[in-house]
Length: 361
Image (cartoon, rainbow, N blue to C red; front, side):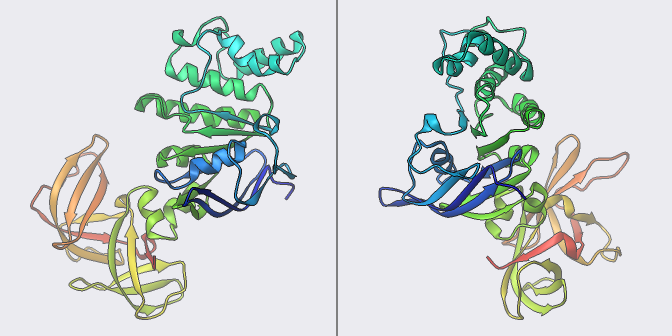
């Protein structure tokens, strides 16, 4: 593997007495779409600002294309940052907004015209070069900001909540478009967002941050299917949970004792021993609901009561009460003449061992 586009080594940053970034290390490969996600205050935005050069680390090192960024000013780094609010100049046309950085560098007029035209083609705004930002939709303004970043041909494009100013429907459309543009130009994108679904849709890899630390890095599928902590399981999508202790450990599965319930079989990823406290996590769509206690084919089956049945068009969301303290969510696809379940009804909740993960933290 060649030189990484970005390499972050043991980055530390304090804001006063608050440790904002705590020994973060990761690398991003050329042409990769990499996202940092986490709750507010997790350190993801500070990390992006450190990459951009707007803040300096207290310890650690940032390399871009193998070159240390220590003491390199923001305007001399091979990066461009796309802000959440786009930061467009309201008095300049689309063309002039995109051309601004090139003109500041005294690029020849003919090359400015060529590069701006190509950038506007990439973001499908070639027919609106003379419009002003106020005459554009939110999605179009976002594409202008992206074109302004791309026209400078940076090594890395940094995105700070790039779709945060858009309404829900436009967000869904634009995340697909943003990924398509990134693949077309082949540049490295590093995106900060708190919107998990957005990150899963667009990213080649995702890093989950909390309290300044990176908890897990992996593909969207890895993060969703194989979380390595309860925090990641909860933050990336919806997760049902049960706490218990390990009764038995086999090659790839363990048996968990949960007071008041049948024993449960689940896969595990970190070495376990008998007696270890664990939390079982399982996704709502992996649950099977049945009125038949003896329905076969699944490794686990526990009794529950339907607390709520919520119609959601393509599927039903059920709130399931397994005990006084444990409430789960199940998502069942609506199909044909299938008869749904109603509030107050007793059911059996089933799932396979491979669909649940036993976690120790």
